[in-house]
Image (tube, rainbow, N blue to C red):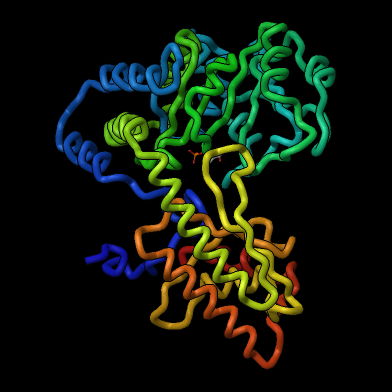
Length: 400
Ligand SMILES: *Cc1c(COP(=O)(O)O)cnc(C)c1O
C-alpha cells in the first residue's frame, strides 16, 4: 500500500533532483531503521549532538559539528555565531545587532541565489547586513578586499549550480583574502558530495543538507572550527529555537553520514550511466531532440541527460514538454524533470532519485509526449512568460 494513495497524492516520479518541493530524496533503509529505533526513546540531546559532532568531524575532517533544521538554518545560525561568539546575552539579543561592531556579511553578487528562498534572507534573518561584492557575472579579489572592513563578521561562499558559474572569485582566493583580515569563511555546500574539500581548503564552516544526496531526514549539517561550532550551537537558546531539529533529524543525519561512507559509489554511478545511455540513444532518434550526457556543473560525480528541444521540428517547446510530463493523461505517472532553464530550450533528466524500473517509465512518457506533439494538428507553443505566470498563479490559492 502506497501511503500517497491514502492521502490522495499523485505518485510522482522524480527526474528533477533532490528538491524540497518533491520530498527531497529517497531515505535509505538503514536511516529509516535508525530513526524508527530512536523515536520512542528519550535521549539527552546535548549528548546526541556530541555524538553528531564526532560523526561530522570524522566525515568532514572538521574539529566539530552539529545538526540543525536545514542548511538554510545553518547559514543563519553560523552567521549569528560569527557576530555573538558564545556570549548568551548577545545571542538572546539577536536579531538586534545595533550594538555589535561586526554585523556585516560579504557575499559575491553572483552567489545571491534563490534555493527555494533567497540566500540573502538567510543572512538577514540573523540580523546581519548583506554586503554584495562585484557584479552579477563578475567579481574580483580587490573588490572583496575593499568590501571587508572592521564591520565584517563573516564571508559567505555559495557552491551550487544556482550560482553564476564563471567570473567568480575562486574559493581559495576568497578564503585567503578573508583570513588575511581575520574574517571567518562560511561555505554553503548544501548539495555537494565532497564532505572534506571545503574544510581542507580552510573554510571555518562547511554546511550541508542531510536530506539531499546523503539521503537523511530533513536536517542541516554544520562542520567547522570548534569555538565557532559551539557558538552556532548556542544559538539554539536564541534565534535557533525556531529552527530546531529533533532527535529523529539528528539520528537520521548521523546514520546518513555513516551510510554515505559505506555506499558503493562506483556501482551507483554505473547504474546511472546505464540509464543515461539508454535515454540518450533512444531520444536522439526523435525529431527535434538532441540529447547529450552533461556533467554536474559544480563537479559532483554525477551526470544528467541534457535534452535540447527544437520547437520547430519537435512541434513542442522544452517548457511545454516539461509541463506535459508533469500533467499526464489519466492513469499515467507524472514525471518531474529539471527545467529551471527551460526558456533556453533545454531541460535535464536527473537519474539520481529514481527507483529501479522508473527509468523505463521516464523514457516511455517522454517518447509518448514527443509522439503526441508530432501528431498534433497545431504545434504546442506557449509563450514563455505565460507559462511562468500560470505557474505563479497555480500556487496563489493554496490550500484550494
Ligand atoms: C538546497 C540548498 C540550500 C538549502 O538547503 P536546505 O537544507 O534545504 O535548507 C542552501 N543552499 C544551497 C546552495 C542549496 O542548494
